[in-house]
Image (cartoon, rainbow over all chains, first blue to last red):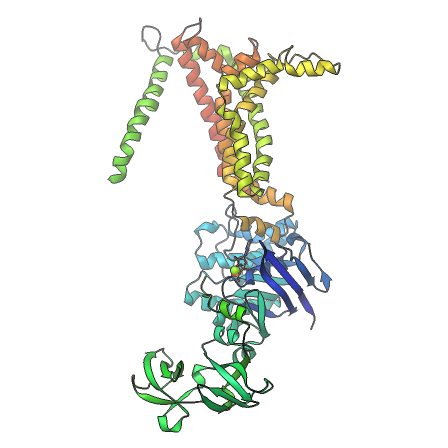
Length: 358
Length: 269
Ligand SMILES: Nc1ncnc2c1ncn2[C@@H]1O[C@H](COP(=O)(O)OP(=O)(O)O)[C@@H](O)[C@H]1O
Ligand SMILES: [Mg+2]
């Protein structure tokens, strides 16, 4: 498959501060790609580079095999669903959707047909004459999507389009958007800071932090094989411990040695060790290398979430069976469940603490 | 209840200084010197129709010129940084800090046959041109004096236009020119409307500008009214009748203008 969008060594600086640091990203035609990362990590900026609203300080933007650096947005075959919709307040729903077609001087009959198609696609038949200010958030959002899609762009950019919606509507719209993307076979470049949203919708997830791409991969890869502690922490919940790689396939955690499956880190190398809460089994203390005291037990619907103090770390454990608070328990996990990662550089590490809420 | 209490002083103000004078104008317009009801004065106004037409015409020209100057200026202003914007606005407002009479008087000395402009033109062998005491001079005086009242409302509406809406237009295929036509202009229409009102209304009823720059030959409604109250033509009833007719005309024009405003912006295109 061809790359529809390619970013090569993109650098963006605002006021001398580096916002994007050598972004390299290839996006395939008809792919659903999600840029995922905490607020302020440069997702919107990356999207705006592709849309043409800002030009990179250095690096190349390629579209369909051609360099498009400096090409203004109105000459790009890309449309955007803006973070806060940016609907035209002086136009009604119909005219908002028809806007791009009118600019291109599409014949009235064709406009009628295509707007009607879009209204059906986003479930807004009958709302043609409404002013956009009187629509609910979800309706406005669907107008914004229709307004962009009606132009049949090769690539649709979506900047946290569901951010303002409540949970139930957001789930519905996620399914709806995915359906639209598959039906129209358009490349979607989707921005979100919600990891669950990214994992459920995307073909490819691009995890970003501090203006740097941390990992690119399928949702399953990103979840199961996080490349560093940031990704592991950001995607799902994790226990991240300081470890010491004694030699290949042997790691020391909390003063005890464990067999693992990773190698190639050298001998006696400090590493980050990630263990997912659902990979840990609670066993009687005498059956485990690692023992601790149950600090808290919270029912989460499908599972219980327990915090267990063991040696120098507070472990999070997910299990369908609850242990008693205050009880001594053993923590058990297999070699497969231990993920070893290179330590992040100190500068990147500090940015992990940025809260991921808008 | 609380709101009503707060509104009370304003209500009193409105009654004393707006409603009562209006009623008095109406009273004088429809009565004669003895206080008996008559339509004579209102009917008399018809004989001044030429002056009405001239006033409306000159005020309209001045308003259009103000709009043509102000609109691009306001648009360009919004593109600058916040600091530059406020500096430029200051410069726009600067003439307003000077006394109105002084400002207009300055133009008199500049436009006169022996004024600065004709003197300079004389050096290069041109002129002298008759500039003072023409309709052109009156329009110039109106534009110069009322220009800020056009710039400010347009500017203040324009700065509030969401930048992302402009980006959306660009995203949907509008080059900068089409963006202005299809998005900026319709969204700034309320500012344009109030700018037009704020220039047209004082321009149509001015009397100092026409007196100083128009000479005796370019009498406007304002001069006519002034003559009835302060001049030797002293006739309070006729003055009131002229004022009333002027008010009705302004009201009519504004109503027609507002029809535009209420329509969908796209209809204009
Ligand atoms: N126009 C701008 N001027 C200065 N700094 C900016 C500008 N736009 C974004 N930034 C900064 O760039 C960083 C990344 O912003 P953004 O791409 O919007 O992040 P995200 O969309 O991931 O939340 C932020 O720290 C933000 O403050
Ligand atoms: Mg953003």
